[in-house]
Image (cartoon, one colour):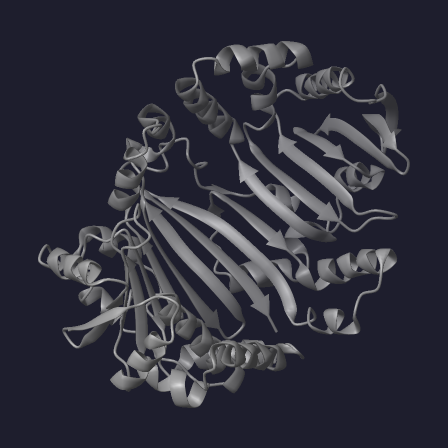
Length: 491
């Protein structure tokens, strides 16, 4: 099976290097889903057609990097040399417009099968013969099914009698709403995950029940595709219970803090109501380990703060961690909405005092920063930690300016050039369960500057990062479905 997987990789690289096109897809999951049995643990479909929009878009993205096409050509040449193959003569005719893989049992890595509709059946047989392990093939409804043993193919055909993957409810729910035109599709069966987990003698049913909605593993669907302005990974997990009423994810919220955060942000992570997740994981760990509560109690007593009574309230509302430009080092700031400002500062005071027992942390010194009574902990010049609470927020930052500019207002992160454009490209909705934004256009040159100070950085490194604009990742929740999206913007 490594041979067939290697062919798919080689074909993908070659298509990108040659600027070829790819198929437009046959619905989420591809046509092979109508041939694969419903009761499989994992299913992957790869678009290996030669004409169409997806591979055209992917090839265009690669060509935006100065060394992109050359690098892919080098990878292809190395593959051909190692395998003794010629792509045009040996590989290209061996695969059809779609190549798929199915793992019949998540607990048995040898139960994998491959499927394709080769342009030249003999070419596929010749390629498989060159593999490290013997393989067997059989035609099933016009698809060439490949496995390491006949027993696996026989089981594949037997399972087909119980229904096809394309007709199964679990697959339909996992694929619902995902792009039908994609380079690759992934499906993981929730039932398969549950069976694999329960087969482990140390499986903790109570812990799973405390964390996962409905107490069972979800089915997962995901697609990877190339867009005109970047690369996208979009997926979702479908649970047995309501995600929004569970502790797995925060309730969907619309972030308000970007309106307060000053502009100049290089990276920003938004979250909400982490107190709920802290509590849920604490309960799960307590159920899994009877000694956990006593061990946690000892740790809390040693540090002098309670996870539930002191730390939790600091993260009960909206919060953010962000990085901004700074000198001589970038500013790193934690900002959280709190109900009791005085108590929030006191909790940080207690944390610092508790850490002094285990590390050489100096006492906090009171200081005025832009009219705000703050604390400064001088860690190691030029690095200090400043913290204060004002306007209903707790701020911990490595820069005085982090407090000054928050207090003064002015241009905000929400209005920062590039941020709204990046989230629009990523199709990020107003309400999410959390999100991440990285300004790659600004952050990468800064990182390369730091790397240059420590050693030589090849000029091509800078040239090949210039097309990268931003990275956006976010989560969503709707009923029993938790969605996730990652979008890399490339120009």
